[in-house]
Length: 112
Image 1 (tube, rainbow, N blue to C red):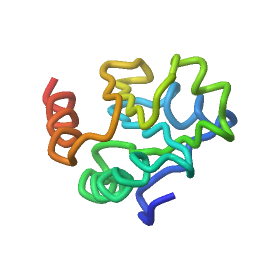
Image 2 (cartoon, rainbow, N blue to C red; image 1 turned 120 degrees about the vertical axis):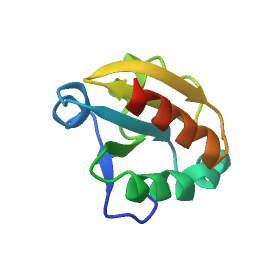
Image 3 (tube, helix red, strand yellow; image 1 turned 135 degrees about the vertical axis):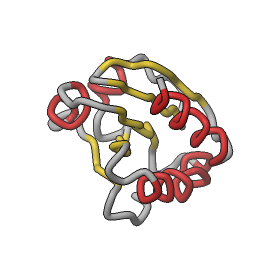
Image 4 (cartoon, one colour; image 1 turned 60 degrees about the vertical axis):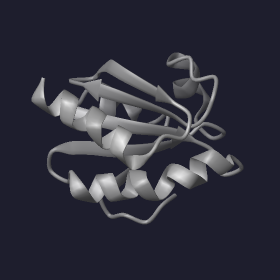
């Protein structure tokens, strides 16, 4: 997982408390260690976690170790980034996208 003290490791065990039951905006990166595009966007996700600390909860969920949650949200391709507002999915990005696109989505949902 990328280095950031603001990045939360999301698991099948803590998904309910960290994301589904949480208020506010959250961004969860569904990834795997073997996925090259996932490793490509990892640093951007970590930077956004630091940049939006206190405004947005940013987490990473390893799909190999947390298949139940990945299946619950029908994650078929990785990286997939889901945006949650008050525990509900409000947006999805599939595939490696530039940091600017991720940030645009965050700003869009923070302003909504």
